[in-house]
Image 1 (spheres, helix red, strand yellow):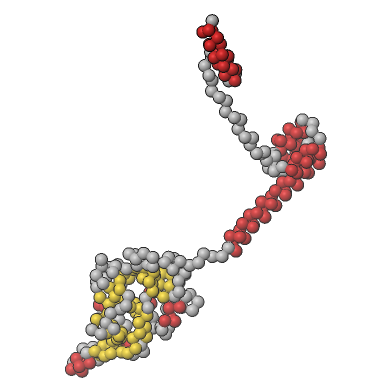
Image 2 (cartoon, helix red, strand yellow):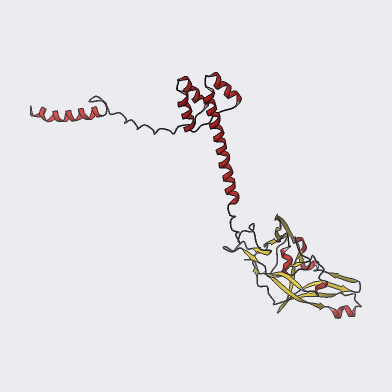
Length: 314
């Protein structure tokens, strides 16, 4: 009797748990039903929704109120309007649908126009001095591939202010058959800018309207790398020399010698912007980009060139 008294409360408890789960005592527990998903937001009204409301005999004022207060995606073409009419939709309701469609189209156009206007009127991003495709002041820049943080380095122009003659004695002794040379002389034996890449990449930036590189001391004005020569200069202790003209009994010529020049290739990236690379490895030494677009009277006029020194590649 005592044993039954102990078991009875336990049985009552189990029966209560089973009832809570909607099961009979002794049945295996079933999975708990998941909560109902949240209701989805109301979809935009369509022609079909209006026809359903008309077929349900809802009042015209109620249907129009629903149209005005809900997002819609109506088809108001001629064929669609005729189908609405055949389905018993009144002209008043069809008019409300046409007006809702027109208002939605206008709002969409205004939103698109505003987006375009904001995009156009947005201030341009500031130029990145280390991005070669970003705007730069006119000049010649070395794109230092191995340098991080400041890879675009401007080649400062070096002044040559005099022409120096060479081989005058040889020319005199041979009656002018041996040519005398005009040399552009640059003070200091080494260029300040040192390059350690045997195949460096340079970027030329010209001001299209005023030919900005011409403002660096060139008389005629430059607008393309094709008007420059890449030349190797002779190191002479405390100065550097570049032959810019020769003359003798058989005539005279101006410009750098072919044996001193290094051919290069260039690609136009955008108006006034060119990428320039030598088409051969550069040996250690002193180099310059020399403007050859104007006759420099064999170096006597002086001017500026863009110099750099080649150190042994690392």
